[in-house]
Image 1 (cartoon, one colour):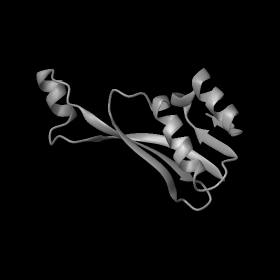
Image 2 (cartoon, rainbow, N blue to C red; image 1 turned 135 degrees about the horizontal axis):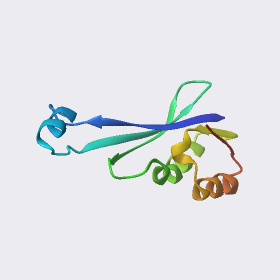
Image 3 (cartoon, helix red, strand yellow; image 1 turned 90 degrees about the vertical axis):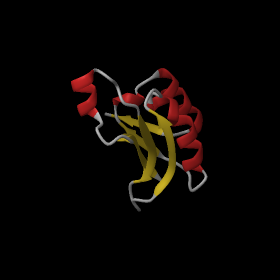
Length: 100
């Protein structure tokens, strides 16, 4: 299967960025990391972390979880995953990286 990997931040505070701009306080948020089968649009792996975790740190668990469904041929992701560690992981798993 071909998967797409990405993440999105979700604010858990009512005021969010406005409070930070006005009062100089940074509000924390959670990040939802996910891998989606591009053909079926099914979420094949997901992880939730705090905002201080880099996207590429979530890649190993996403890849392992996604590979439990079917063999992964290609993984499409953005530049946040452009690291030697990511390339090594994908090479070990026999997955072609498509990083844009």
